[in-house]
Image 1 (tube, rainbow, N blue to C red):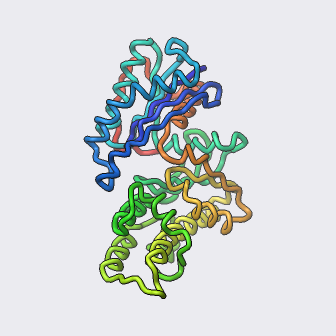
Image 2 (image 1 turned 90 degrees about the horizontal axis):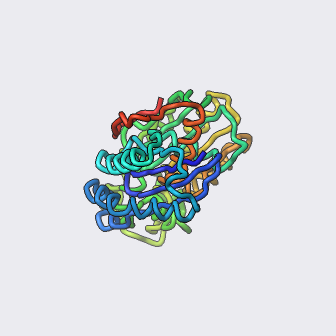
Image 3 (image 1 turned 60 degrees about the vertical axis):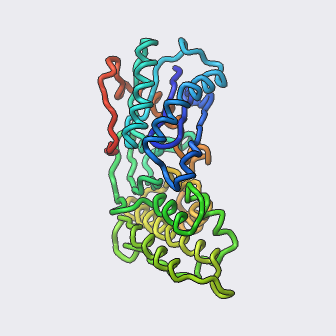
Length: 331
């Protein structure tokens, strides 16, 4: 079975080929044009996808050695994401699928991130706790089996990745903010500034990061670098405030479910400080991280999950009768 995966939920144009659980090729094109604006501009992202998608798919096919007529199905991100960018990917997939006479498998982007961990560790077994943490989502899940997911907690306002992006903008750093803050925090003292950690003292599995972002904004309005507190210390302290909350909620989730395994999914999973703190805090828990190439948006996870769903006879459309779902939930 050979599946072409397509991912266009935000600002990465991606395609991948999966066959029998193995990724034969994967291509991701980051739309660097958005760095000029400090964030993603939806209209620009949609136009970039239209320009790049055909090239990315052809490159991915050539790299894998697979021809179009060898494809058994196409899986494509249905949501959540930006409406215009999702339309570009779904429209492309439907047109190609119609021309080839093969089924289209709509994929939940969040579910794809969770299953990217099976690509990192083929011995991963259900059940497990999943921290799904990205620019658009911060959620803690109990994953009992394929399609059996229970939401333990989620953010009430900003996602952790959004806190990184907006924090980077306040600090005068580049986009995307997560890698920029992680790099700029190197060598700083993360205990110098005691930024708020919302909801960390409550016996809750929910998150909140809007207050932290506001606190940083007010702090920087009056900040003057001195020998006792340097800018790098502020950056390191801000990063630590985000990570402390994530680690504490994962710890509570493990204690509540009694599961022995935790997987981390989404773009923020690439943060090395988060990885180190989780390993240090939860020494008796098996913690699985996706490969760095599968942390950010990619089509490998979409192709892989599409193959699983096709094998189990789940959620594929011969008649192409489905639409995008920008606010798609995972249930």
